[in-house]
Length: 66
Image 1 (cartoon, rainbow, N blue to C red):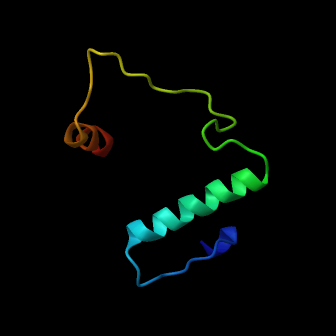
Image 2: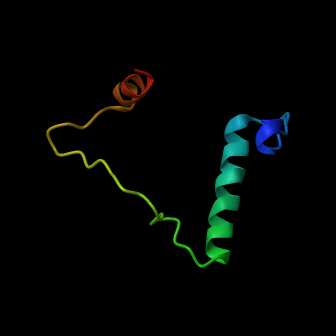
């Protein structure tokens, strides 16, 4: 990470809580910059599931792990 100039900070709080804080910061920054976080730029593809295939949470997690 040092070669890219990234900063690593380990916290004693729950990692999910840290993720929520990061997401809130990202949304606030997007608003400040006049961007819509619900419509990201440079997204070339999206997946739309039809009624034939609706994965449960456990099925989706299994698919993502494979």
